[in-house]
Length: 348
Image (cartoon, rainbow, N blue to C red; front, side, top):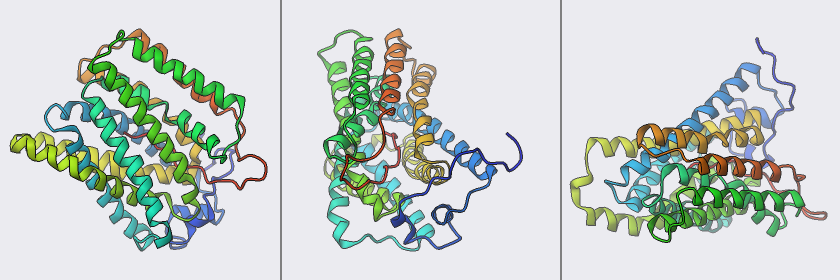
């Protein structure tokens, strides 16, 4: 496709509540809400940006896996997400003109942030110490399945055989991935189990946070949720960093903090929100299927992790489960109000 001809798909229109803090004509979200169709080159650039984010997120699994051999895992996660939250807060101020959230929503955002960025990161970062980056990415890749199941339990999505079948297939894929390294009841097995629980907690966060998108922009919600999660990690994170002494403070670790926090945690989310506004959440979510595969390749190239047949086969089964789950019709059960779709964030 060439020139400024846009793909023959309708523009994605975010929830009406997103429009409130955005100056008209200055932000892509405002134009999307106003029904202004972006030019083809803008859509292509947005999708290319989302693709770069998937590469950055895949590389982040490898960066974190390498750095937690030097920096304690929860301490690293705390500093990283504190940086990410502050970066997003600054971008929020520049893009939307304010950083506040309604007092009535503050507690909900704080609790969800504690779950989605606090509990999740403590579990995931700790688990990564005893599993491989590739296996971790493949298990975290099941997040859309858990999001769908929680949404069904909340009755914000209809129960459908495709969702249940997709969940069963995806869980089978996880079993294949875990079994690829052999049955391990020690550190590796515990790491895989903790990663699965982390993926479930992240999927739960996405499903529970979706109703808030009717009142808050994704950027505003994510910025404050990240800061709330950072508060949860502050205690154990600071204890780990102090106990480790100053030996971990080195140029390499500071670069890793900057990459994981500012690039993968902060700027990447801004690019994803822009892509969601221009091309829609489904196309961005489909790109996320690349993250586990890229992580396996990056980990093999940089960390020397072997690419196992079970990882490849299990990863394909997980992708199949996600695709089957997406065949279920959208929308809540009869009599329930529709809920805005959460941003398809998979980044760990």
